[in-house]
Length: 535
Image (tube, rainbow, N blue to C red; front, side):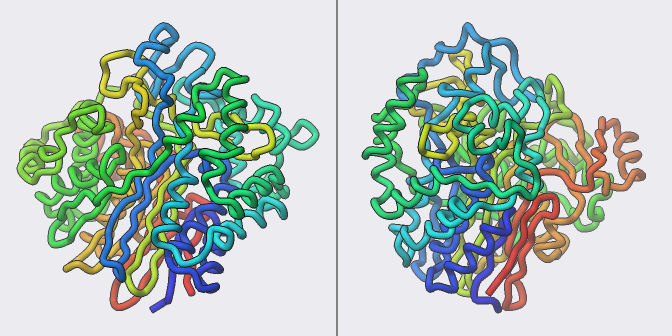
């Protein structure tokens, strides 16, 4: 069995994790080193001013927990502050289009920056090496540069979707971003070397002096001054209050496996609900990706989506019926309706388009069964970089409902719901599969199918993440080009509306590690630039 394995969408992050482990770090040190590199080489997918969910299964310590670091709305917000600015709901139902896009780009679009604090929490509590050692690979990439990968470049070229801005605006709107990502007024191209000296100097300062300088020290003063000068909502008080939450996993079962996933405002409850529903069916006998199989799984997806839209969110502000939604009885009721051919209705204005998918993931494990399973993000990025600091802030205010009195309405200190769902599947208490993904609203759907591929169809990790996928977060079934056309014809005959994408793969970009036959095997979604590797 390998001593250590890591899977991530960026080769640079994978190599950094391996290197730190070989230098004496443990699985936490290696994962955080890799995650810090991700903030450099995928700087609009994630960053130190972002948010996320980190699963820690530490077998040697007999601890299993989540570090939840969803960003919070600044203290200055009020429920009705954007009510008069509403143009319309985004075409896919995820977020709102406001006048001047104030919730999507610029200084009012960001929730509190939680990522750096969460990474430090993991290292200080469970790591072996110093923050200085762990951050060094990221610092090197800042100063030496890295080649712009196709996935990074694709982000910059994404067109406007569902009412949201074209992504190149994230790079071009503010001079501080243009100075980093443009050369001679043109976007850097695939293969160009990208250096971020300001970020490197900041990372060196954090590595040497600790993260408190970011949240309470002179860096916090710089951030506060920049926000005040540009009408931002985040203040020194918001920074000082940034603190990740330590939570127990949300637990469930599927067949004879144990499921451990994240609590809200993450998407773990959707995973539990869908698996509970599908436990009532003999999926294997249906045949993988048969019309019967896709229709059955799609209805479970749709049901969970309806419950997410209407019932799920930040439990500090919303009374979520977790016990009901995670119960076997509720699932059995839903399953009985699917048995009789009932179709659930998930209305969308434009159901063929999904939430922006700018997020990243990594999963790392050692042979002793210690696992770090981490999803982190900037939303789709605010475009804002404070002069001299180099990092971009998140834009997670976009997803809040600007209308008062709604489950997702704005409130000071409130977190937005996300589909992030790092999950570990165990059998008789021993880990079987650890996985997660970036991909916006599609995250839970890709994670679900990968679990089914392993548990019901006995696939290894790479086959499980590579197998053709579909998605149903609306009444429209989204199919990749590798779903047979004969199967699509059967689905249409069952009165399903379908859309076939020309690509062979569909988000999310699932990454996984499987434990089987006394060893580990990894899976990296081929739709991204990533890989898995071991030592």
